[in-house]
Amino acid sequence: MIPRNRPAINEPDLARQAGVPIATWRRRDAPAFRQRVPSLFPSSRTLLYDRAQAHAYLNGLPIPALPTGEHPDDLLNDDEAAAVLGVTASTVRAYATQGYLSAGTTVYSIRVWPRRDIEERRDNPPGQGKGGGRPPGKGKGPRKAHAYEGDPRLHTAALALSAAGDTPRHRLAVALAHQHGGSTRTWERLLTQADQRTGPAPADHRP
Image 1 (cartoon, helix red, strand yellow):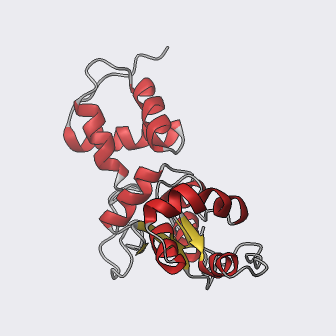
Image 2: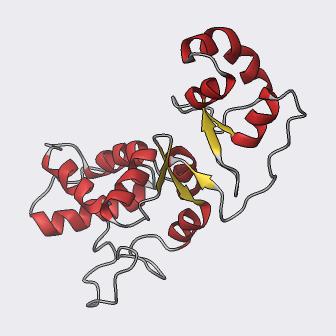
């Protein structure tokens, strides 16, 4: 997470400010630096740091603390947004691509979203409540034919049905919930709706 109003910096820029090649920085300086200044996104391949903390380290000054608590202006990457929404990171990226979430911004190749955007989507999921079921910025349209109309997961359910063969519906829903997040029951509903749109689908053989 990039805390509110705290610019980030990556290691190539740190190396330039330290006046050394990036290879030298990574071999000689980075290990000690990383012990003192934590990465803002520890699980990301792109290492970003708080700029104020990094500058303090380079200048031999006390390292300032990061803001505590959550704030609407915090910037979250796809993994962090996924944790808030209860879905997978790939679903977050799909939401952004299909307009069910803001496009976000890119900071040193990492796409991030303000916490407020993620929490708004969490509190108003596609097809439910304020803003649900239509991309941000769209005006009111015709009444929905069903609760999941416009939900990007409907396309995923339809693709799963087309490739399912004789897989029971419930087993397919379990697999989709595990892969994309959400509950098995929700995916069963999505599969049912996708089935109604595309025609016959695998039978549910549960007793």
